[in-house]
Image (cartoon, rainbow, N blue to C red; front, side, top):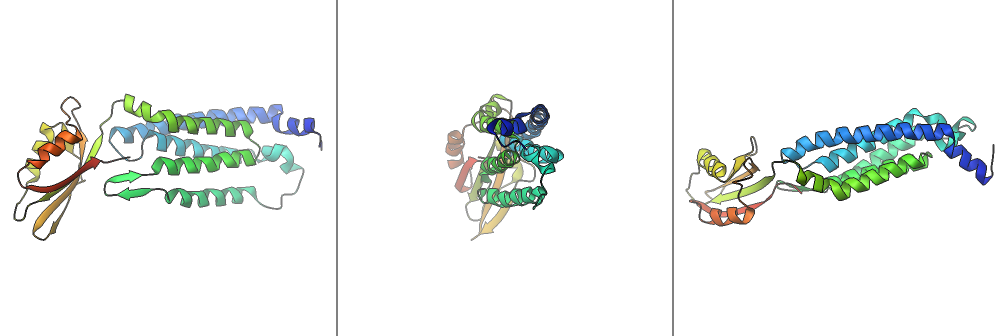
Length: 250
C-alpha cells in the first residue's frame, strides 16, 4: 500500500475511479432532469413543492443510491485491503434518516402557505454530498454541490419563465346570517381570471358567521387580477365582513 502523497492521489484519482465518477455524473444529471420534469408539473398547478424541490431530492437520492453500487472503490479502493469494522451502508442509512428528520423541522405550514420545502431538500442534498466526499467520490460530490447551488439560485427564475398557473389562498368571513353560494363565488373568480381549485374549499361556522377557505388558481393570465386589486374588490363584495388573501405557496 502506497503511503506517499503521490500514492494516495493515485488511489483516489486512478482511471477506474475517474470512470466511476463519470458514471455517477451521468446518473445524477439524468435524475436531475427527471426530477425537474416532475417538479414542473407541480409548479404548473401551483403546488408548494416545485422544480427546485423535486430536482434536489431526485438527484440526491440518485447520488446516495448509485454510490452503493461501487463499494470496491470506496475510500480509494482500500475497502478490499482492510477488514471493515463497521458496515458503511448502515452508517449512510443512519445519516439519511437523521437528516430527514432535520429537514422536516424546517418545513412550516400556515394555512395554505408552506415554506421550507426547498431548504429541507437542500439540507438532505448536503448530506448526500457529505456521503460522497466521505467515501472518496470527490468529483461527484463537487458536481452535486454545483447542481444544488445552481438550482437554489436560478431554478426559481426558470420556473417564472415557464408557463404556470400561480395559486392564491383566500379566507372569507361573511356577516352573520349571510348565506354565500359557491356558484356565485366561482363565477366571480372566473370573471377575474381565477378558478377555485377542486377540493380546496373548506367552511366553518363561528358565532353565526360562515368562514370559507379555499385556493384559487390563475386560469387566464390576461385577466388575472393582482392581490391588491382583489383586496379592493373583496372590500366591497356583498356579504363579506372580513377577509385574508395571500400567495398559496412559498
